Image 1: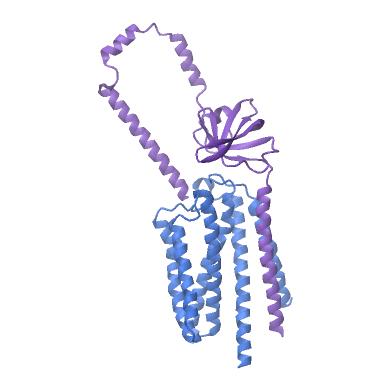
Image 2: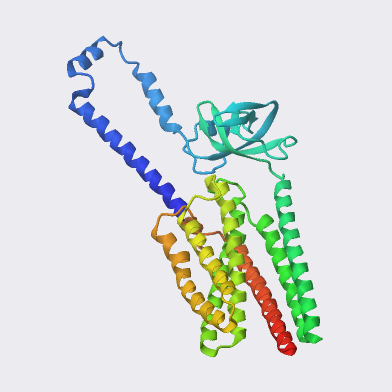
Length: 196
Length: 226
């Protein structure tokens, strides 16, 4: 698909940009852009004795629990959603008193707090209007990505609220059946004329 | 079974089939991921078949035009004109559904994507076909000129529909039934898409048949009057 190719191309560019940045930083440090050797020695000498055990524990913890990297549109808990850089889904219950209108870049929007099954709370902010059925829904699914402590929603989905979809289907069906009835009547009239 | 009953039966079968396709396009298939609009992928089930039927109708018009130049039968001319009219109608429907998809996905109804540009050119080419028909009063001369034009117009169709959008970078998704990992459709989407293509082709055949019968009747009445 063209748009997939586009995404991959973009990702590739980002990857190369990050790679190039890493090479430039490494080269700068290697060429002496970092601390001079003497200053490094002084710093080591001045520093208090390194708490080796605490450092080792930290390293061990980071190895035991690596930072999760969710995949595109994966359903994730609140903690992961908050730091998600790709668009993910998070499901939870809406804290009703927290639902409010807010001003966001490019117009008005909404904000509310979402609590998932783990008990974690997430501040959701989005642009535009909330979907039909949101007002009565207890559980919603939000698509979006994390930004700081907030979750920027691209879409709020209300499970079971298909009223909008049913309305579009009804219009399509009425259009089709109307066309069918008209053409069928025309066909019958034509048949009568042919037989006359 | 008499011819009339067969026709009525086929019409009701088509109505039931299309109704099932409409229902399935909304409630049988799950929304496809990767689109900006959660349900926008459902337009696929209407956009692709209308574009397919437009191409088919232009092909039929081209074949009927060749037949006219060969046999000089007014019925072939009527077939070519009816088919081109239906092709133009379905091409307009494809443009409208495509623009709705573009509005949801790319925030604009029209952004001069190669696909949009090529279908705009195609619409103009076939609009000119009807302008040509309306400009020539002599029926035989009109039919000959229109037949030659329809053949030349169809030469541009594969180029505009299949070649141009693949030469230049296009935002248009190039979805084909196949494994989802390779960017293809999943089985439910593919089933409904194929069913929809069959239904729209059925609608085209039905409308084309009525147009031809109407034209035949008009001609026989004219002959009776003369």
